[in-house]
Image 1: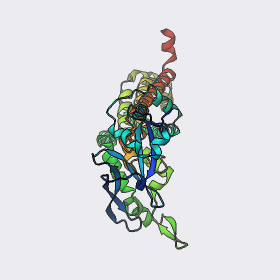
Image 2 (image 1 turned 180 degrees about the vertical axis):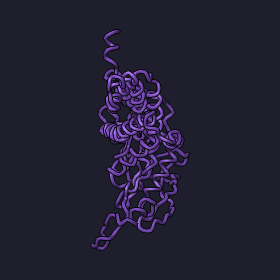
Image 3 (image 1 turned 180 degrees about the horizontal axis):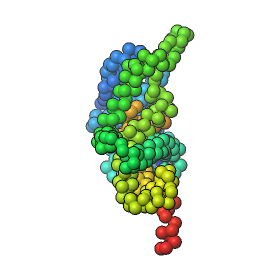
Length: 378
């Protein structure tokens, strides 16, 4: 007899069964509906209101029976999760648990034991299309952040360290570039959520003043409307990538400047004597000798990018909307482990998956960027 979640997930170290039943079939005397406050914003007026909505159903002992789910037709269901091991020990079949009150004695909230499930979570992880979707999202946001970050930082690093350009205020520019790195990612995410807010965010107001807006249908007629940035997949991903670039470009600039200033000036002097122009000096001296620093920047940026969490989590609905397009691997792990079903075991498996992916890619980058001449001497 096999007991599995409808998505193949396991709660903690429990093998679990998940099912939904109408609340009127489940609720008995002594059960209580717990409510929670929900904040809603009127999209037309921007006015915010709070209201109490059903959250979970608990029994007379205070044990959670399940989350209350309200369908589109208004009907209420209870999402129930039971421990498969407790069901097996009591000789219950899957049909018995789903159709009778026998589930009450097998609720996960009442299980005090720890049941080892071997490698089930890792097998599920490999087959989980939602996890691989989050992997793709993470790479897209990281690449669109890192490529311009490295290019722009390298360009400014070469300018700031070139004594022939005689740039004034170099230290001021360096400080301005680095300052965003001093801010916390969470505060920056809230700031940009307000800036690009709908319909009264500063960016929308500025664009509306320039005559740039979107359209919506009202009573069959097109009406001017503010741009809903966070309902657009390209805009949402672009904003996340821009925030990451803005936060970390200064750090990359400082590291590259340190690498360039460590190169011996005598190499450039010899190149000038040999007739090399500035472009040739950059491509044949600066860039090759910056390889160790660029390798360090690439690997540390990769590690940070794979752990992307605060910005996509706080920017929209805390689940990576719209359409889960900015749901990173860590956001996906947090949603499963600490929100809703609290699948701690599967969340741990996702964390291990992130570690393996990051380590594999770091080793791959190190191998391809290593100096082949050094490898031959070894």
